[in-house]
Image (cartoon, rainbow, N blue to C red):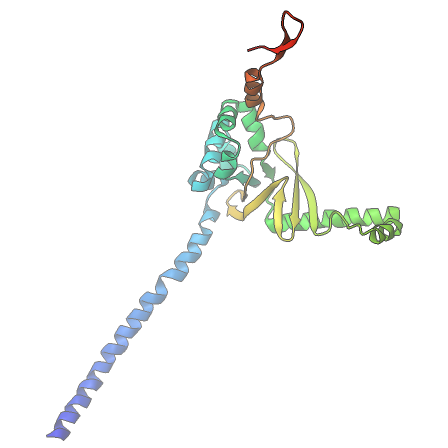
Length: 250
């Protein structure tokens, strides 16, 4: 009897094995079919969007999107190019203060100039910028060495001086505003003027976007003029009273 029970148990175990194997295979297929491919597609989605389209959908660039619309530059960034856009984040606009931003939004000419100052014709990745800046610094160093020889370097070394450009590479890019931007790379960190690139190489169909942490202001544009004028009007000015003493006009 015990032999019969054992034999039946073995037969049942053999019959159950194909179902277990099938279930395991189906489970493996479901596990491997989902995440990897979809993650890769998410990474490449921006490659199917224009610069303007990407900005309009990035929650961190809503103030920039508003500015582009107000200046009438959406079509330019949606169809032209290729361009490189240094895109100020919402925090960069917030740092200017609401009064300054509101003033800028109402001054279309200044707004257009400021936005164009963030756009460069051509597609420059972070690697391109680093390479260009490095080549520029090498050329300047070589020219300096050829003209001055090694005498100044010797004295600089004796006095403990260091090369000002050590570790830093700098070059310039011409913007749509007609002004040059200084771009540099220091220890792998890319900077545009005094702004730091916080997210680099967002690829789009008509160029590349680098997010920066400051709003760049071109020469000749004063974003705080209205605020300074208000402060001057509120500050009491000295004046002479009837006794000839200098007093304060209230």
